[in-house]
Length: 508
Image (cartoon, rainbow, N blue to C red; front, top):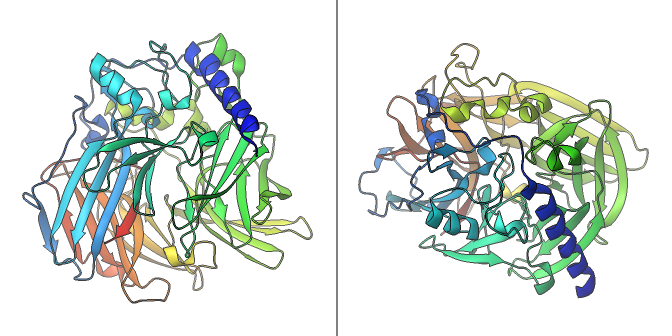
């Protein structure tokens, strides 16, 4: 792709963003006081927007059990940490400014915790003004600053990764934001090439066992693909036409292919322009249409084949692999009506959560030769599926995730979120689970391989959660081969941190 073509695409991106989102939406900033549901207190966020840094080398942190001696590295976590300014709250959870956490495990039983806001252009400007100034994904805000491109709205709040020793906070619609991995000080947007400045670099990159990082971005009816080497340099990029796909959150990589599932979503531009709708509020889901499956060849970065599935919405994949002309992958389905109606965000007021849908694991087979598809579903409610990083893009046996435990939202109406951690053995069709009980909320869990091990699943399962009774956040470490035995160790903070989305473990 030549520089002139890239600049043309970037100009289209800026134009579509400024003329669309900046013109208002019907999802107004909220002025209602935050409620008292104890499960939802981390959704209050840090109201003042100041950096929150805990650098006491473990002072005030309580370790229950014993941390494994070989566990050395940093668990980075990212998520919306600021949801209110000037007495007004965002209407959508996805809109909050990114708060990056670093849980540092020293390998000798010591652990520290640090958290700092990502200092994006948006954050700095609004911090100085004391109010929200630019449009957001799901909240109506009239632009009080020029919106020249997506990075003027970048919240850097969705995920985090490290590549070649450099740390990046990731967002759906703009550049990666680089930070210092030791201090969490923001260094600024990262452009993988001059012509890629401001082009979206999405929040779910896939790292293969050899260190190659794949990612994508969508904008203005286009799909941009990235291949980044283990040394952190851009190896290849490509732009493809992708009409009618306003939101693509995640994708999956196999040894030979990149696979995207494209739900039947469209944007109601009249609602954006005339009715005062937000970007999220202008999305329309057409259940009569198909979810498209786009398969792209890795060697050429060109489409290989498309498939059609029944209409469905999804956010997160587990993994994918191929064998001959067969592609096998797994992902979690989401209730489209709940997400688009606004019920998804009912918990942002701190009152009872109205969400009642159950996300479920889906298993899909694609036959490239015949064009046939096969799909089946498991009944358990779960989200944020993860695999051992050594089997990304390869055939996998285990899926790890937070899950609904005995204390579901139906039996405890006030509670919110997942209470259990589980490992699904695909070979044996067996689940091993540990349930924290009704007064805990469990977040994403990551598989960290044990040093010197080579077999899938030999490692520690590490994640975060919230103790509802103590109103404190915690990190937890399991032996991934004995989850039902309970945590090896739990690290309690002397305070709570906002609920987050995704993380990355970087070994020391």
